[in-house]
Image 1 (cartoon, rainbow, N blue to C red):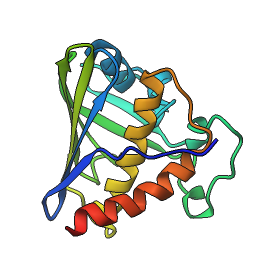
Image 2: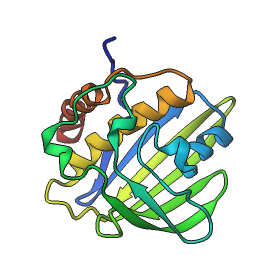
Image 3: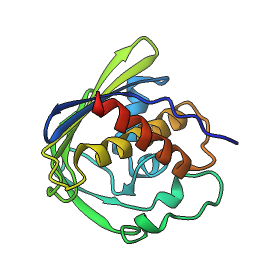
Image 4: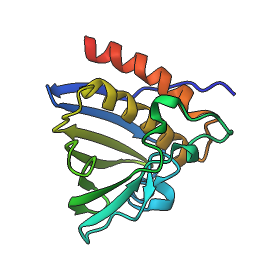
Length: 179
């Protein structure tokens, strides 16, 4: 099954900040659960422990959970596989706003803002304080492919190969951020 990327709107808000918007075909409560519950989050992003108002949670990198088919893990990402990042919850306002550190606090702050739109949910993701040398391009393509995964999961559909979507997102984001 060939995957088709439906890229969210992405924009550079500053040299270290990107913002993505994605309209998801699910209720705000469902999307909130996919952001905060580790067992659901691992199907589109990273597992670990649940995010709550208790302050800290873990993100575990294991993208083998993302593809419905058995696909090879790209060599360029293998060194990160299994890594655990300890994150802090900075704001927890169910079901509208979740703000956390990213990369153990070394790669900035991510804000997930949710707005109900009938039976759908508008997710606005802002990642600020990016210090990675690959900058907004790398995080932008990562977030784009993960938000595509989220869209599939909340809609009850699968994705054969996450890495195909990720490769497509790299090209889409490069073009979007260049304009």
